[in-house]
Length: 463
Picture 1 (cartoon, helix red, strand yellow):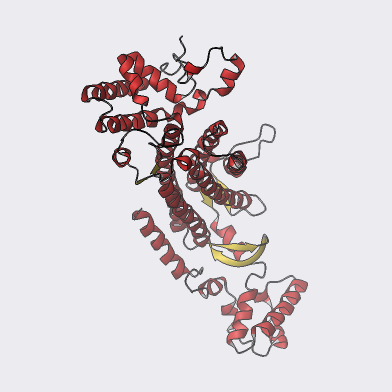
Picture 2 (spheres, one colour):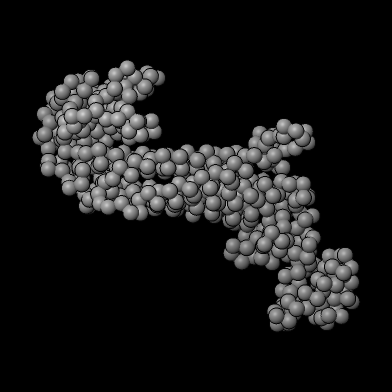
């Protein structure tokens, strides 16, 4: 096993300390940039050819060599292990020189590892954002499917984790749909700023060769080129911005997970996870644990940590490139892996959950959650809301003292606190009417929720 030669050895006469060599090496994790590094090298080669730096024959030889490297990496499981390297860039160059000789050494003309790695990261992240968007759409689809399947079911809505007002279960599903929709929008915005090409900035001052950067950008599918070479090689805003958007996404998945965990407890009993996404206890035979959702909830903290770590790493760096920036990759790579896995598991859970409609609807009809509806009823009869609120509060107190729901109070007893109460109060206090009156856009009335489901389906189909 031979080691690839460093890309920077000419000025040095002494041997590097082996511990430092291991500490400095990034090939163990940045090898996942291999495909994009080769793609960027192919485009750079074309830029050198168009600038007259490479002849047509040299360009053809280099491109054929790079394509061969890609094929060998696909077919040889030990291809990366047989040539230990400092980083993925030195690995690709060493393999190229092995294949085609000294012509391969010409490829690095006019570029630095500084603009090379920035380009690779952007290419890689652009593709991963697209893949994350697909996972997001699948999770949203799972929420819509669940909403459609249980469109008539009601559950208690909560504030402060206290029963507040009833809502349709589909309304709950669509709340998370909207959160994930904002996540998709954020990632689309991030992608625009990722899709700017730094190649051609070289180490920090720009390239001395007449390389057509716009041509190279078109080859790689970039929408624009960077406007300042100092900024281009030292910028990792796009990494921070992505991890920031990913943190909000994970926050949303953690909230989904928390609701599902709570709702599947015996105390709530609204949901039950299937055996496909639950685990058991090594001691207690009766247990069915929501480990899938607990892991998603837990992994959100992991992504939040990457955001804090990268901000701390970059906050004091002088222009331009510094080796501290090597720390961006593991944080970025793990964020992508964590987010995509969490989205996949969340979608799977949503497709493997049983909604106990009867239990949920029974809970939605109890706990004085129609109290606001009674206040609104009195307002419609002409009472100012603040007086109506006070009156209903006293009626709730009486119901609590008697151990009954509001709709179980006698009509005369309600009238004793407000003569505006009539026989139609019982219809107003029904679960169906309590839901139906929330009929403005965004409300939980059945017709509004049906419209929202249709609108969600439409948005997904146009994605």
